[in-house]
Image (cartoon, rainbow, N blue to C red):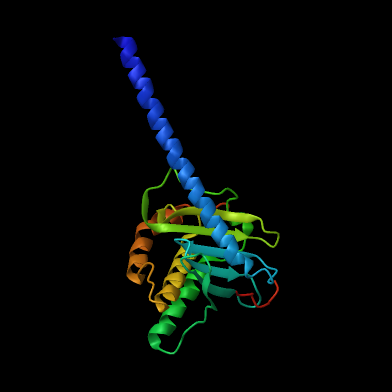
Length: 225
């Protein structure tokens, strides 16, 4: 009887391990899909020899920042259902109204708090697809990567859009997701509301501030198909 019980326990344990392994394989496979689509987007900026930072949601909407002097070059890119470039445009600061000017000031503040965003020592070098110490997750899947001029990846991850603690600087994350949301909203494709972003920042801010990231150009016009 004990032998039969032991066999059943071993069988159950094996099934659980197999299920966990399968979930891990699926997560890794989806992460590679995100990487492939991000690379496809970045290929359109190959004429610009400079470090590039990319953030995306659902492998559909992308925000790209390119290191440049005196100001960064920033672009919004959207893919269609077939994975082809549907929209690609430079992000322009809108300051016509008081509300827009206030919003741009908030963006400048977030980016200032995140600087230097192209300091490679601030980023990890692994591809993160899960975080054992995660305390909170929500939202759709997001992907982030910073690529240097040689194409080496830094800070790469694929996680839920809202993850605490964050694998990157909280101010940089807030800047990216708010800018991306605003650009997507212009095309009637809201990603995460401004109010939702603010609430999330309150939830993760205190945790992230305690855990400062320890690890982590030339102008040209991108090509477009």
